[in-house]
Length: 138
Image 1 (cartoon, rainbow, N blue to C red):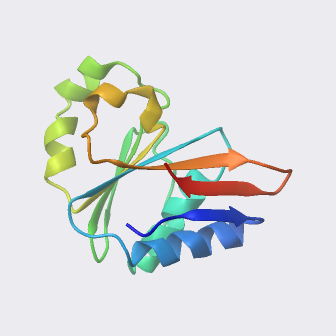
Image 2 (cartoon, one colour):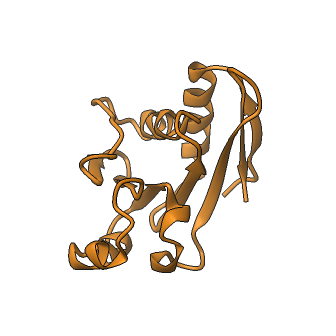
């Protein structure tokens, strides 16, 4: 993946960054998105999906845990925020899903790092001002 080190100042800029990054993603990629609540993780995913020609509604999987999108790549969008029990993730077959999907994007991946592969690409989302976020590849 392309080196990412960007400052965004709006939701639109976050969407555009996600859309641009989508062109560097390929089958088998696993992305972790870490940052505080409201830092733009789900908005960034919307941009990625827009860049992958998905035209439907994109929502945070905070309560559903996993959302699936059929775009140019088949995308599994996961959120570890409300479920940190690694055994629950193993019981629902997350590890198999992770390796049988085109692209997996995991919000709050830092909460259960032991279930993630060594080659995961981690993007950090940091608040640096009221409307500014720094998004960078760790």
